[in-house]
Image (cartoon, rainbow, N blue to C red; front, side, top):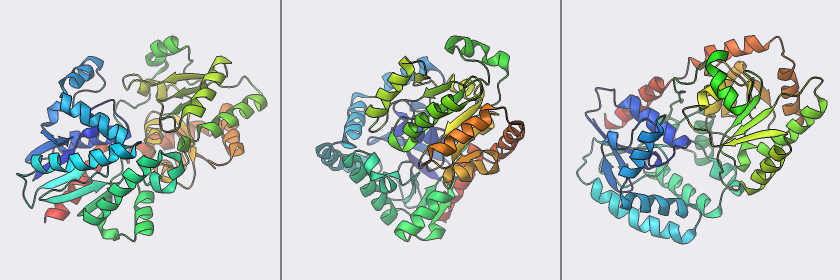
Length: 397
């Protein structure tokens, strides 16, 4: 089997789609059923080693970026701008099909193109598309207007022309079926995995990072995510202020880690203000080489997102032996099951109650952590690749 996978998300600092693409491709490359594997990025076909360097190594990551051609960098910037500007959308939509068609012209009917991020090019063979979430449909007001139009147009194209759809949770699968009346037998759920670097760390292993950040082992609450409206950080900060005012003991510090996302100016001003007052600690972007220790050293991960296609930080925290507070009635519930504390993401009071509960060293905390460790074993990139390869085979058989 010859497989081409969209690789644009690997040409810069990895976002959620980038991590999904990298880890899935890493597993698929081990499979003997795949005779040839290439990435396509901005109209170019690339061997895996051009994009799949070790992202935990800063020097190699920087070297990889230097390898990227001027054309690729320019097109990458154009695509990023296209998400926010209608004129750039038109330019990108006109240029890209010509480049893609030329690079894919040698493929045949039983070859597979897999788009991990809803962008579906013209391809002579079978086409598989991953739709990771429908946030631009559910919360269009929380994205730039041009991005909503851009993403939704490509999702519609994928639903019309793809031979098979992959999702990363049953929640997203059900959304696609209900919203678009899409056939259930043409959708496969491929749950994500957490990198093996997310594991329990001892206090001695945490010591160096703790000293650097002035954090005590299992002595802080942690929020990790891009900073944008649907991550619900405003409501978390409201809840944390109430928790500090009502805690009968010294309040546990709140650490915020994440880069700026869509429409995040307001929340960044608030983060800066609270950090200056000493109420929170805002770390900004945390490199993947130290993030597992930061997660494992936390008393609890707080992940009150309004909507997620999966909610990978929930799984990463469970696998790290860290308690989790996350949103109910969502994909995060599907991932966390009975191993997490569920809150109503629209109610600050339920977040306050969860913070107070875990802040008191609830006797059930150890049991919850053990349930999380056991539940995390059900998810792996190996299983994700197994289900993905099964979908490939279903369209070429």
